[in-house]
Image (cartoon, rainbow, N blue to C red):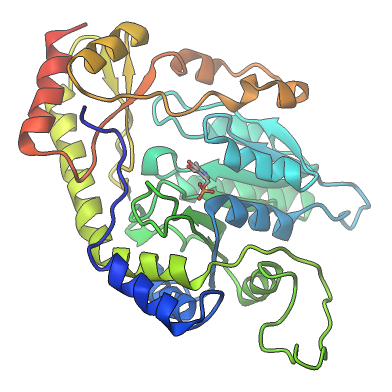
Length: 374
Ligand SMILES: Cc1ncc(COP(=O)(O)O)c(C=O)c1O
């Protein structure tokens, strides 16, 4: 089987992890700080805090923007969100006591439909969560314009949280994600472009949010405080979300691989874009010149998806729908609404292998199999 996803582990990982274990310090320490320095240099943003998963980073991001009454006393507890994502993006909203309001999906990009988002923004909107599905960036310029208009109309700007879990290496208008004025969340889960085994990252747009995030990721305690004598105060309670030295060591080693791996994903995606364009029964997703995907996933829209997946499995090629539309879950039945854009794509959407592990022969085999029909 040609796998859909694989962990990218550097051969340097065992030695780095062994050094951490020998040091006797495996909690939070200098390796996490070294990893954060390396991430700052890569993302190009100083305001970042490593945490122990993308889900923790999302939870923290939503906590940072959670509802407080506005100047007019109104509760602003609604979060506009996409149902086409892994559940982690949306359950973080619920975990913070905020209300989900579904925004439709743009069938071309599989990202959030910004027209629908603009229509659904209201004075009750506390935040919007957008997901760069598969690594393909949302139009962040348009999003900023929409939020500017909301601010001008209501005197408060809904926060924007970008779920960049798939998008390490993606750029919008030439800059890496994490630099467009929003709270951004990355995942370093086992099979992501950059893996710590488990890990995540929160990137803030300003110093104050960054400082709050660093405190909240570890109970609200300032790590430089005098805990030996108990001489410290917690002004705002937080969580046990910190990354440990072992995970940071794995991440540091894997940073050496990640650029070449993202290039390989992009090269395979460009090959599919060329070879699958115009093939009967297949529709490619949108490509825009102002953004570049990391192609963690390569989504396709296909006719008769069950037959397509059976044919691919028979040919030794793994495919997956990856997620269930989140609005279909019974725990969020109260938020149900019409989503015609999502209805048009969710039964046609499927992902084919695009990763660094594909050989020239593998990707030719994928294309030949699809072209032969199903
Ligand atoms: C879109 C999206 N957001 C968030 C997450 C959660 O990341 P983690 O597994 O690091 O908690 C995932 C995990 O796959 C994801 O796909």
